[in-house]
Image 1 (cartoon, one colour):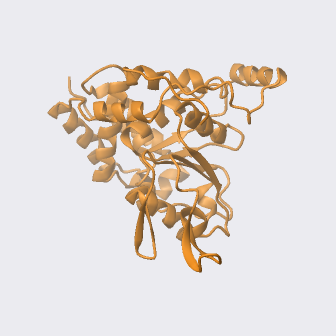
Image 2 (spheres, helix red, strand yellow; image 1 turned 45 degrees about the vertical axis):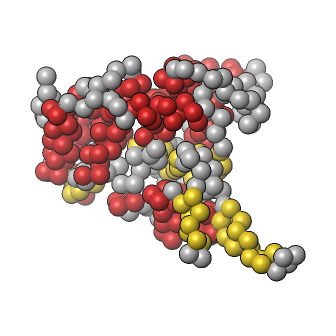
Image 3 (cartoon, one colour; image 1 turned 30 degrees about the horizontal axis):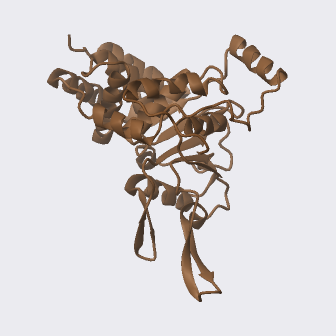
Length: 321
């Protein structure tokens, strides 16, 4: 990056300022930006779902610029090989030796565009890097940069010729964020920007307002956020309720419960508190759990959705006072 973010003693303020900076290029996606910041604070990965043309790529690219982080994008296609993502050994004629050529996974923010369009073998190579935060080549482990977050996109309306991620792999994503189509007013504002000469490839107006040091300080602060035993029990009760819901054939795993705990603590810290409330858990329940449950086919035919089922569970499981 050409600019260096200003030194700050308040990482919360710096990370909160990201929303305003991203809004210089992307209109009306504040909740998605907040979700991405929560993922960075929790060192987790994100699944972005939205129809084409909703600025998913621009959003992640702008966020990396405002955070002074490295960014790379991979367009997943049916012929993409694992080595195209992770890197591979290449023979060097000058030295007569094999040298490792890093793949795009060696970055801070990786946009895996249309991850469900590539075969399972290539998906697995990326998901291994996500979980282990390293790439193994010929028995040698090569650590990935820190922070390292994958933002994978999916098109929710086009499934022909795709390879849907198995439930066990979906569970590796911390959050599933829905990128909505802008409202009428937001779309008008977007068109006015373009009419005034806005170029989405030019991010010179976006300045770094936070950096890796702010993220590291934020991550350390989130780990100190207090969790009352009653709130912990509430998280468990919500997740256990999904396993007994008649509309679901797959409920939330214990990993999902720990994910909900982590995202709730990050949200509480961003809101300026050093303790988690039941409302924090409710706010993050849908984005943290919606991809960890699976509807029964008959419930799907009746029009049920994962968010709708979770909404019902949140309404029926009593929250601590």
